[in-house]
Length: 314
Image 1 (cartoon, rainbow, N blue to C red):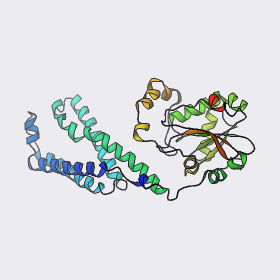
Image 2 (cartoon, one colour; image 1 turned 90 degrees about the vertical axis):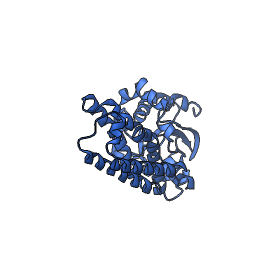
Image 3 (cartoon, one colour; image 1 turned 120 degrees about the vertical axis):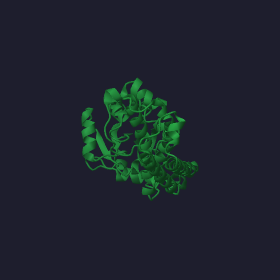
Image 4 (cartoon, rainbow, N blue to C red; image 1 turned 30 degrees about the vertical axis):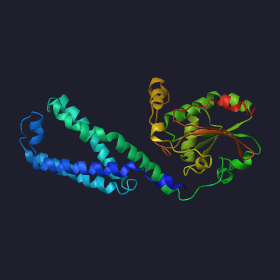
């Protein structure tokens, strides 16, 4: 395993320490001077300053948590998650009360630095923590391609390595089974099945759910006769060198554009994660135990043209 896969980016400890100092400083300030923020905003003094001081103590405690998380953010990611949730729900609560006329809008000035400014860095830290914890869970380098193909069996108990000597295989590796784009991929395969069959390819779906979940998903798209291989430990994904996506790849303009503007999410819907949400997908032609052609997606929104992908083998 590459050591870089188990290391947080160098900026993470500094951001969390700064967040810790910021929260401690803000909390102490509010405890000592609960009326001052109101006076700066031209608001009347609070009727119960002790409640504001209690809020300051909570803010200060978060600061201690961030300082602890800075030592190993991958291990202490729940602290970051709770902090991010607070920074998301806090502004939502403020907007709700402001719309009801219970708080003036200028009271939300502190939300910019207390909440909104931390959304992107905290989200990025959680992304890296998920990647690192998955890498830590995988304690070995993984299997070679031949080993992974031999370990992967179709429902009729044929391993993919031996099967590839009888007929070229079209391996379609999908992300978690709730993925909108994975459902689109299965729909595309069903529509282009004739071209795949003409190329004398046998399609095999590789997924990370249970065998039952895989069969249920294939049945929705009329692919009941297609073999599905459950790979919850991602052994075949890793052997085929399908990486985790970066934050920029998973949350990009292309991803949102295809989901909403192109209407992918409205056509295919989405479901709960069954697999690993960071995993990218791809398609491979395997012949005689070797990769004849590979298409590794660089975005969840990438789409495979199976008719074109099958042409060289034909």
